[in-house]
Length: 74
Figure (cartoon, one colour):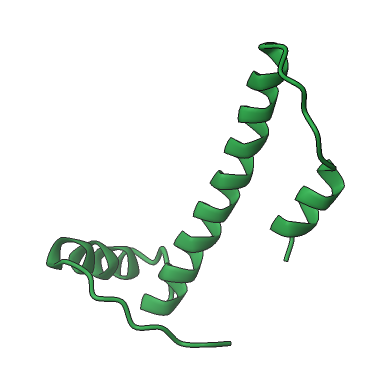
């Protein structure tokens, strides 16, 4: 596992501290990991929804949903 350092504005630091105080995460790293996983899941869902919309619009769809699922299951 690697470590990264990211500057954030005070308003986000306060949000992180509040989430930890509320028990939503164990610590800062835990909260950031949870946020990134949620973002990753949202991106996968949005990709599928875009594909479904393109299908309804009659656009040709190519690809393998099993391969897409593998990308987001790691």
